[in-house]
Length: 427
Image (cartoon, rainbow, N blue to C red; front, side, top):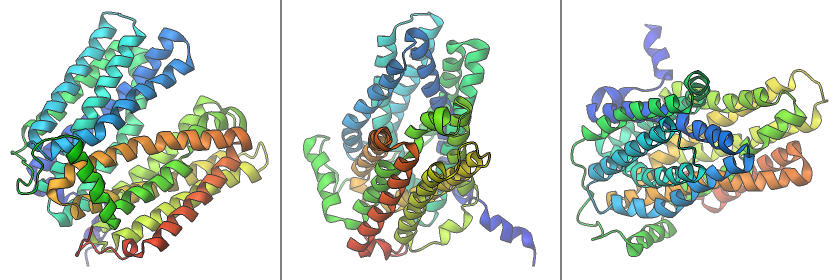
């Protein structure tokens, strides 16, 4: 037997790229644009600090990004279920590209306005809140249901790579040419995203059940659907268990300054560990396409995630100060977190895409955006507040254990989710 095909089965499945040229163009565009987006996220923070010398001012960037994302996430999904999804995605992409040019222009012109920077961040977040549900709702129309796990793995892998490469590239470009060069690179790379969406065929929603117009009533229809579809609802609830109770990123600065030492370098290593786990899970995601009990895998992954976060906290609490192996152990545990989160994300996205009727896909993707964006921010508050009272190690240990208990309790209460069968999807 030739061993090469067996090894290839373990690697990420590229079938969607080979068999769907439209998905391939969309994926390439999103991948390049994702690196540019992460580049801009870091550059905006650096510019805000350069203008104010205030960490609080940098923190407000996140507030100006989060509020429109949450406010427009649901409405953006409603738009996707009313209008041609290609047109919605294209309009949002054009808006995002114009805003990328505006970021570059204010840097080249040396405007130096923090308020302008905040305004551009808010507008960019609003356009993303409309465009992302459209692109997510388009994918099931380009890729057969059997290949959706592979398509989501491909997107997740490049997303994790963007989270790693974008910040590194931002540091290099800002040091070499200033903010204007970094923003200009983002504007150039985003052309690929425009081309990817432009080349799509028309993607109208299912007209028989589509709402006549986007509004509060259509948004509420999507929320009511969640209330009656336990398996789809569980994809959101289990993610909230992980993100709200056990998202450790808010602890990194204090861990670098106090617990482990090393400052910014340690913070970078911890963040890279999480991202590396996500990338590795995507690269070796080939067998995931054969998994039928996707709900059970999601529950298992979230439980592993919580256990790894608890282990991360236990290392900080129990290991003696100065032990040289602590940073390596913490980084390895965060890599496990990243890998578990990546696999969970692949199947949660697949269940949402397959088990949701086409006429509601946009609105449910809008809810997904709100959960994905809001959950980690709320988690920053929960774990950050806990750390103020107990210390970083205890906060991570308690949060990880709470995540495990919560997800197992949810699985016990909704047993049908662990029996979810990819061949016979039930929402």
